[in-house]
Image (cartoon, rainbow, N blue to C red; front, side, top):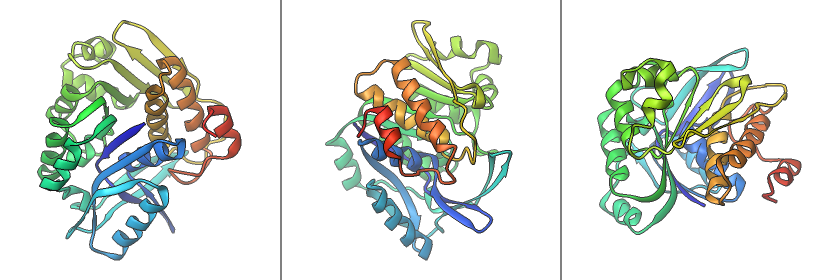
Length: 292
């Protein structure tokens, strides 16, 4: 498959540990781990951390021709874990608030056809990157438009959620984000799925529920569930992003929602056992997934 991931690139800092992250980059990295091709559209700072970031992206095998340099500092997220569940504090402004798509970038994107474009609300928290995102979404050729709500702190609004939903063919949210999406839609959370499928383009809604696993709702009323597994959790950082990547990857190969979600849950179950957001896949996992 071929995917374009737009948005934040940042370093998750937890005490003395520092790992590369940001939801869109995590998705791009996991698509590469699975054997797909991924492009990242973002920005990093003209600083030492920015140089380290570019090298790290190269080591993942993610195409970074659409990652530019910014005078803002490279993104950082101070991570605090409580029972393995992360909370974040971001530098603001960060380089990823300054994503600029040049004429050459837009010409390149116009010449491409993607299987999926991945985006969220966080990278659209400021106007500059938000304009770049919507310019891409309104002009690019892609089979799927995957909207990961990715609500963080106060960096979202009802309007921003609705703009993302209007362009989405697949929505992904966790159970804690459901009330915010329901609020944007003007309904209670018990009606959110029905209300979402009034959006003309939306075909699937994925809801992750931590230890209760994940659900995928489809427009025809069909719903499938995948268990979270029983692995001992080290950190949930990047787990949802790995599920997103694997679902898109296996869907692009022709697997149905049930088969794709089951495989995606296996990837997420592995990721929670590792401290980093984009760990190397062991051979036994690759064999289970059929991506050896």
